[in-house]
Amino acid sequence: TSSMALPTTSALTPDSFTEDHNLLRAILSSAVTHGASDIHIRADAHPALRVGGELWPIEMDPLTPEQAESMVLAAMGSERERHEFLTEHECDFALADPGVGRFRVNAYRARGGAAMVLRHVKEEIPSLDDLGLPPVVKDLALRSSGLLLVSGPTGSGKTTSLAAMIDVINSERRCHILTIEDPIEFMHNGKLATVSQREVNTDTLDFERALRSGMRQDPDVIFVGEIRDALTMRIALQAAETGHLVLATLHARTAADVVHRSLDLFPAEEQAQARAAIAESLEGVMSQRLVRSVDGQGRRLVLEIGVGTTRLKDAIADPEKTGDLEDIIADGEYYGMRTFQQEAVRLVLAGEITAREAELVVPRVSDLHLALRKAGFRAAAEGAA
Image (cartoon, rainbow, N blue to C red; front, side, top):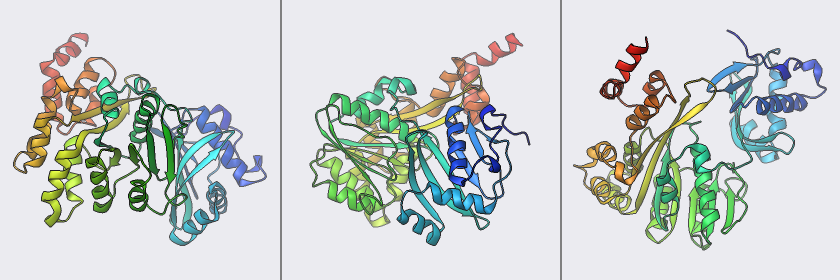
């Protein structure tokens, strides 16, 4: 396999530094310089950088198990984190270096050796326009109450999109924003709003406890880093029903799947009640993916959006209509809605992504190619050929 030729890493050899944490710092500095989104550190392997969506090994010797162990422990900022890693073999934490940057980190063990993946979190909060998010996202962010759910795989930019939305609220509403995160990734300084950011395991024990306590902290807007269980979802719904705007992430493939996943969190005997609560509270649902841009030099956001119209809420409330959610989203262009397929077709026709990349985000590849042919894409390609 080829390795990444990084001019600033040609001197990155273990002999170049007296301490392993200096080597780690140099790797992170090079990663930031070259626009890497993620850095992989693992025993008996080359450190690797994810640039433009692809993973490239750094041209240096593989790390020894001792080096990897030392680097992982040096990255941790507290004895609690080190104890958790040494006893439980995995740990989530944040690493901030004023001279390099801020990183979200997951440390773990692989084949008995220490390993970690660090995601670079940019210090500056991007705007909605910077991210290519449509106007409806700002409209949803400025709702006074309700539930807004964002989904997507790891690395799809959910946290960045939500940070941009929180920044809009911070800039335009005089309110109290409470965030519950694991870990804190973007630092929000108060603008028009007052912002209280709480980190799980540092400022609170868990999401559920922080969310329950947060209801007594006079919040107007609550951001929950991730809804993982029925109890957290139940409290989030209660908050949304009582006049708060709740933003949260959830693991799901599509906007329609977000609804199904939310219902699946609850036991069977509670699903009818949960269905009614979600239908009542849901203001919007977003699902997103990142794919390579057509020039291969960056990545492009592909976004699916559902807005809580009467028709969409009715489909959530009625189990016999829930299967129509994708069609409702596809028909909701007037309200700013769009499906992955509609957005993928638009980006292909605009020359921003290739049809091959579009295939990675749509639920049915055959439908994508049919839509492209109807739009004349195939004829244009054949004419060019």
